[in-house]
Image (tube, rainbow, N blue to C red):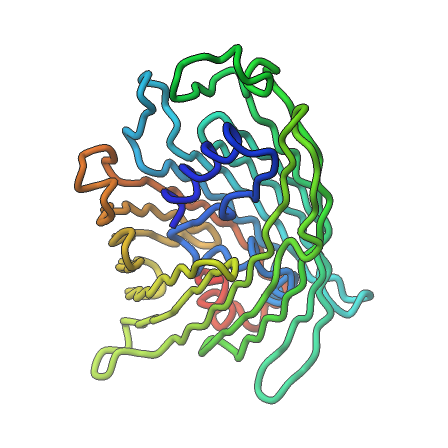
Length: 320
């Protein structure tokens, strides 16, 4: 999905006066990154959690002049329960480099918590800004005549967009979770450079997963999950399965149709989780030899605030 949007962004910038922003960044560790897309999770885990992700997508992808234009994304989200607010707060940072476009965002989330059935529901609101910068001087039109288009000689240009997100997240002990959220609600618009108007696209995220003990061997926990993202123009689906041994080591596989097969490995040491994933590119980008796959590193630290439920909460923390 993002291959097509990358090409479209470049073409629209060069030839059009108005462009819609590309898809929001994707992560293969989506089951660990729910806080990154759903403000309803803030504080819902009864722990102070910090989740960092670093992703290099389509390693080896370069433009015709040999410049590295493959996406590189770095994300950090910290959330905690705040009792007197009857919910939780979260702070998020992200940098997403996409070719000659650089995006830096900062956001603040609040979630109100409710007891619902056998679990808890968080309803959250997120407010944040996105600083989008484009270096127009690096773009080359097909005829090679940069001077023929004033937009391509303007150098670095940027615009700060302000937008909001809404989300709801439900957790039932250490058994299941489900979430639904909408980002970039305002679909904020702004001008970057003299002739290029940008408009952010609204995104909808849906996720759900379940943890169950492997029959006959309770040392293993199997965690199937699904993650769906759409901007109402295209849909991306990740189908995941993780297997955890002794609540410490995990391995898994994920399938993203028409894009990649993902292999994941990780370990939990006390309150710290470390993970790695490798995307085997299955799209035309991989078959043409332009991509050597994608690498992603996860680092998560959670300090449990409910000491009577340490064993119960830990399993939830690692998958959310």
